[in-house]
Image 1: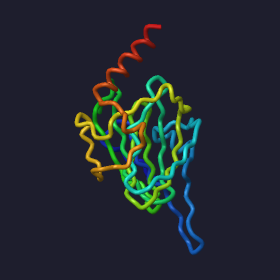
Image 2 (image 1 turned 90 degrees about the vertical axis):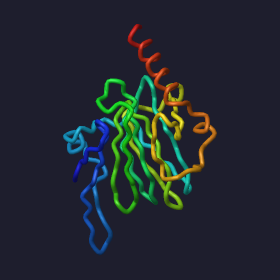
Image 3 (image 1 turned 180 degrees about the vertical axis):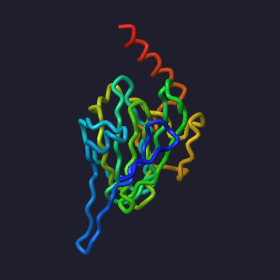
Length: 189
C-alpha cells in the first residue's frame, strides 16, 4: 500500500495493494493502523454512498465548525475528485489537488478537515463511497461555486449537471469571509 502526497498539505492519494487471481481480486479498503501511520485519522464516524450520471458535478462542499475529513473511493465508474485548501493557516492555502478515482484503479483520496471537496463524473455512471471524520450537519454546511475564478480549478467538463443546492453555492471570497466570521465567533465564546 502506498500513500502519495499531493500538492496540498494533508491531501493524500492511497494506492492499495490489489491481489488478483482467477477468482477475482482482494484489497484492503481501510486499515486503521496503516492509515493512521500515514497521517490519516483512524476515527471515521459516517459512511456515505452516492450514484451519479455522466457530467454530474457535486460540490464544492464543506462544514464550517465541524469540518469533515473524507476518505473517497469509487466502486463503479470514474470520477475526477478535487480538494480545495481553505484552511487559512495551511502552507497550501488556496491550492487545489485532483485525482482520477475509478473502480479500475482502486485509488482513494483523503481530504483532510478544512478542505472543500467536490467531484465530477467522467464515466456513464459512478458510484462513490466515502468515510467521514465528523457527522454530517446540514446547518454547518457551506458550498463554494464549482467554477469560481478565484479557485481556478481546471475541471474536465464545461457544462456540468448540478443540483439546485450546488447552483446556489457561494463565491470563494464569500465562503472565506463566513469561515473567518464563524470561527472568530467560536473563539470568542
